[in-house]
Amino acid sequence: MRVVAVAGAKGGVGKTAAAVNLAVIASAAGYRTLLWDLDPQGAATHCYRARAKVKGGASRLLGGKRDLQTYVRSTDHLRLDLLPADPSFRVVDTILSARRWPDRVIRKLLRSLDGSYDVVVLDCAPGLGVVTESILAASDVVVAPIIPAPLAVRSLDQLDEFVAEHRSGVPVVAFLSMLDERKVLHRQVLTQVRGDRRFALAAVPVSSAVERMGMEQVPAVVASPRNLAATAYRRLWAEVEERLGLERPAVTVVDLDIPEDGSPEVVDDAVAPGDEGAPRAEVP
Image (cartoon, rainbow, N blue to C red; front, side, top):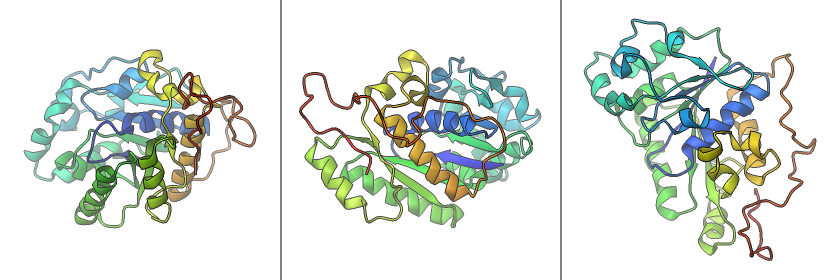
């Protein structure tokens, strides 16, 4: 079982969108996948049409007295399960701080699922604290969305320092999120990070297909599989998959209506209505 943490110091950068879409891509590729929504806002839970509620709340779940599988729910997608969020996750830092070995809690809980899943995707709340320490101890790779802004890129340095301090050696795969190449600043940041080995080759453009997920409650790669953002998420998963050293299971792959060459075949909605002449956001 491999654990992918989608995390970062800042909120509002497309973290949940990445977790939701990477999880469904992994399951479509044949991996038994679990998405664990650790954000008290429960956005990932909402995107999969589930209620953000865990019986007994964070205290009981993190107490470890019940198998984690007890809290898992199925989704509408083959091989994809969900461990929903709960509003009480707001106090997870306090709960973990009271434990003797707080950094071991998440890893110990996930150990009970080994053998049930191939991939676990953790949608983490923004920030770097005790919960993030515990998540790092359980993770095989950290995926970090970065919006194309100088201060946001600086937040990646903070994440790197945090990882180096608490679990050196865990790879961090950053990617540009909400990229709009019509903006000069975004193009400048894109040029800046192209030589940075910490960044994935895939960059996710700004897209209403991603923004609509909260309303439609369907991952963008399912609702609009040929959208540029969906194509970027698939490329991002391919890079994460390689980092994890995963081998595709010999099972039926779910058809997400993906073109054989992986290229979009429709006009992407990254171009605003009435602005068809502007250059579209492209994946570098």
